[in-house]
Length: 170
Image 1 (tube, one colour):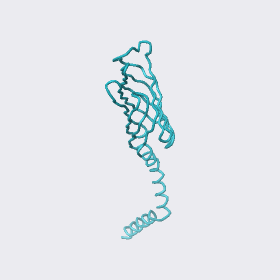
Image 2 (cartoon, rainbow, N blue to C red; image 1 turned 60 degrees about the vertical axis):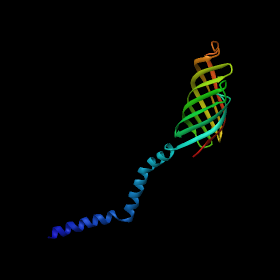
Image 3 (cartoon, helix red, strand yellow; image 1 turned 90 degrees about the vertical axis):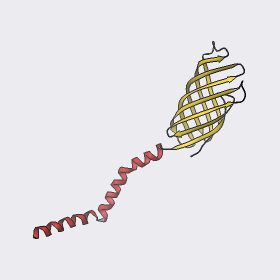
Image 4 (tube, rainbow, N blue to C red; image 1 turned 180 degrees about the horizontal axis):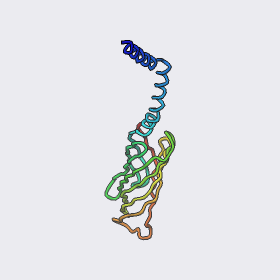
């Protein structure tokens, strides 16, 4: 009977030592240190937000722009249709390379259709995007994939250029 009581008091003293405030603080600190990288990664990479704006130049002269981001990647579509002669649509798939809130650098692939009174063609190529606040600039070079109307025999590559206002809703 003494062995049972001694065994019971030993177990009780172990439980009391685990509940001691110093041990509890160490355990809590260890748990926080182990979980911090998970919460920091979740806050930075799981950012889902839309963007919208108006940009000028490619694929048509004045373009509406809409996109969706799931940090660090995004998909964007821009374009305009004013009449049968002037139209264009462009789809981008981009990845953020660096920067934070105000200045951001992105790289991606763009593909689209552009048309004006003298020509109409499909294109695709790499692009670089710069966000500076709400100012947006995109530059790239594209390969003309298919010509519907016009003569591009002496110009197999075309410049992709967009500049304008883009608001990120986050």
